[in-house]
Length: 308
Image 1 (cartoon, rainbow, N blue to C red):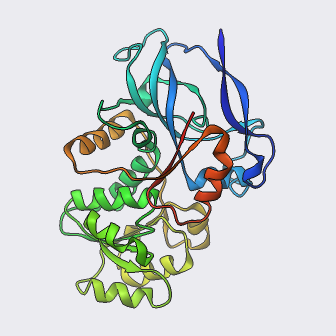
Image 2 (cartoon, helix red, strand yellow):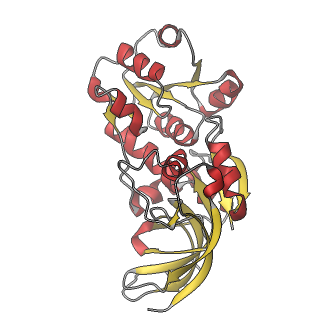
């Protein structure tokens, strides 16, 4: 099978952001059911930094030289056999494990959804992973009309999507965030609550009728304590942060069920004006280390994008 040599961000040992560097990689021609996409933008997630550092090695070991990135948007440049519905030149949004900080990626055609022509590339590149994680988590927690849901780290990557999806589902949303992000959360339709000492009491005051479900995208002990104190049904308390679930077994560990159908539903909400995508900063491939330093601060509003 022929290959194309393209640039990608890799690391050959665990460590800090400086282990990331750009190298040439072989991107294979698509096999049956696959396409190759020229990447225009990719998203950066906190899990990428955990992976790079080795902190996730227990459940996600690296295979050096290891690539990074789980979400992308780009243009189809090669189509393999037995692919229906995808053509050369199509603009697409997609997902593929640990391979998207790159100039190109070969992926199954059923990992793609059509990109709206008016959607900017950076926004398209950061939708898939965090958007589908938020969608899956709210589905697993049974969030729907009339619920009051608490979302921790509500101004972050997963949080901004979860707030909007919960509001669109008819729920009342409380979101924890620093005070600088309170106007931002109000604009998304959430009731902001400042994290820190006294969090549980502040949430009780903001939601006198009680809290039905809690989604934790922060992974802090105080987030867990507040959820356990406020939500009566433990099945409706969940976290997307693996280390938080390991530290507190009473809280459900929530993952993601990614599919072209779920991604297309998010795109439809975007086109309807019910879902906005927020880019905090954009970096080039050779600036991936800086992107990881930014994501590790824990103070990113929305998402970070990488563009080739």
